Length: 307
Image (cartoon, rainbow, N blue to C red; front, side):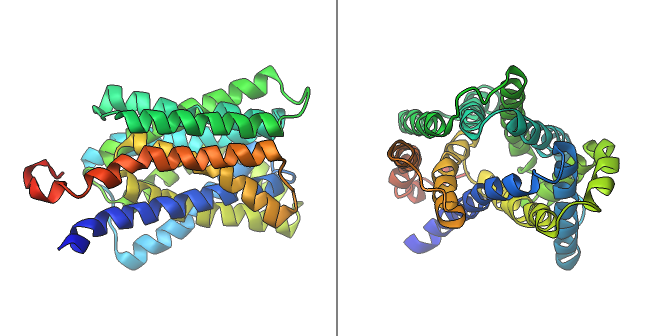
C-alpha cells in the first residue's frame, strides 16, 4: 500500500532527474553547435528536430491534439519558452561569458516561484525558500568562478534577463494547460508553436546547414531530440504533479551538472570555488524538495487533501 501511494511521487522525481540531466548536457551541445549556427537558426533547427521526434511519438501512441481548454497555456508557453527563450539565450550567450549568463538566467526559478504564488496560488513553504536561497548562492558562486573579465555587454545581460523572464512566464503558463492535456500533448504543440515563431530564421538555417560541420548539425539534432523532445516532456510530466516553484528549484541542479559534464567530457577542470558552488546548488535542491518527502507519508490518511 505504501509503495503504491509513493509510486507517482517516485515517477515524478525520476522525470525531473531526466530533465535536469539532459538540460545540463544541452549547454555542452549549444557551445559546439553555436560556433556554426546563428542564435535564431540554432533555435529553429532544434525545435524542428524536436517537432519531428515528438510527432513520431504522438503517431505511434495515437495521441490526438490537446483539448481547447489547454491551448491558451500551450500557446503562451510555446511563444515565450520554446520560441523567445531559446533565441534570446542563444544570442545572449554570444554576448556575455558563461558565468554572467549563468548568473542572470538563474533568476528564472525565483521568478517562477513568485509568479506561481501570485498567479497559481502555489504555496511557498519555508524549506522551498531556504533551498532556493542556498541554490542561488551556489549559482552565483559558479557564475563568479567562470566569469571572465570584460567579457560581458549590456545587450548580452539584457538578453539573458529577458530569457529568464520568458522561461518563468512559459513555465507558469504551462502549468494550467497540464490540467486538461497530457504532458506529451503540451510539449508537442508547445514545441510546434515555438518552431512557428522561429520560422523567420528559416533562411539562415537553410544557408548555414550547408556549410556547418557534421558535428555541429548532429549537436543541433541532439538538442532537439533529447534536451527538447524528451526532457521537456518529462518536465511537463513532473510539473503536472508538483508546484511550479518546486520544479523551478529543481533546475538549480543544472549548473552543478554542467560543471561535472564539462570536466568529464571536455576536460575543463573546475576550480575549488566552482566545486563549492556546485555543491551548494545540489544542497539547495535537496533542501527545497525535502518537505515533499517529509509530508508524503501523512497524506494517504487524508484522501480529501490529495489532488
